[in-house]
Amino acid sequence: MGALIAVDSTLGSFFIGVVLSAMLFGVNLSQVLTYFQKYSGRDTHLLKSFVLGLLILDTANLVLTSHSLWTMDVLNFGDYISNTSIPWSFGASDLVIGILDICIQNFFAHRVYQLGGGSIFVPVAIVVASLGIFGVGTAYSIRIMRHRHFGEIVVQTPLIISALSLQVFCDLVITVSLVHYLLRNRTTIKRTNVAVNLLSFYFINCGLLNLVFTIVCIFFLVKTPKTWIPLPFYLIQVRLYFCSFMAILNSRQHVRGILEGNDGIISMPLTGPLASIKNTISRVRHTANGAYSGAEKGLNVSLPTPSDS
Figure 1 (cartoon, one colour):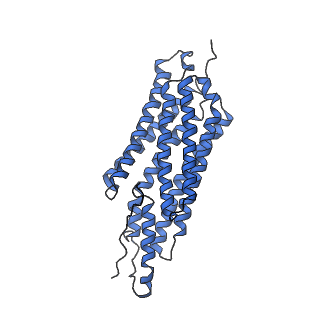
Figure 2 (cartoon, rainbow, N blue to C red):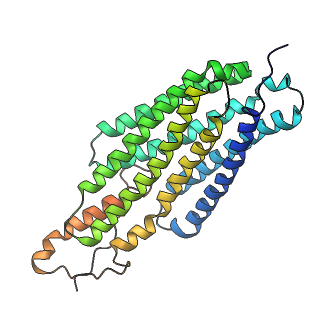
Figure 3 (cartoon, rainbow, N blue to C red):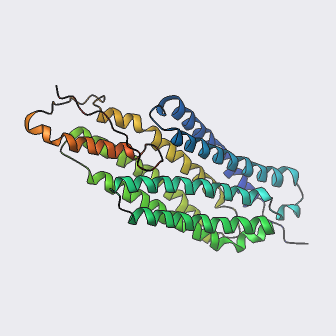
């Protein structure tokens, strides 16, 4: 007879994580519905399909984690020996979330490429890191689905820590580079600077939120490798990734309102010497809007310039 697992620090932690994850899924679903109802009018079919695909992946992850919880907490209720076996859906859920993460990370890599004026160094670093995360995560998922034993999760802890560490690096690079390129485009125009500062604020907040949960997850993996205490933080973090992406996507209309002068800031006519900065405003507006617009290469979205009258 194998060693029994500690229910409170394994199945109990798993239950808490799935419940909190399901609550965040509701938030994500609301964000997606809001996007299609209010904010997708100017977007291409490619971006809309991209958002819909991410929602399908997010839903699949919730279904798979719920299946794992049902199998271990209901079907195997009271059978502690059976609960040392891991359902196939446990490893499959990690594989699905790995696909979702790499899609979002490469989307932002493309945004960094656009904001950086075609510089490829930082985007390549993001892509390489995201591929590393996906590769390590896939290896972990395959091993879990193949062996399907609780002890295998403990054995594979270094793989999990490696993937999460790469994710910390990737998220830091994305956040710092996006904020850097946005602040680099600050001008003497108050409205433009307000928009740039707001975009930077969104990126920093969303990036830090993901980083905090990832780092906490790594901490508990190192301190309590034989328990599932890190699992709630991990399940929340993977849901926050999509949530942050949708929050940024849905913030575009507010930023456009600032750029177009619908925020209460008085618009000064660009005449005489001020006319020479008109192209700068247009370029910054296009750059800010490009951080959120469609996913295809070379997308050109322009926002209206202030009236000259």
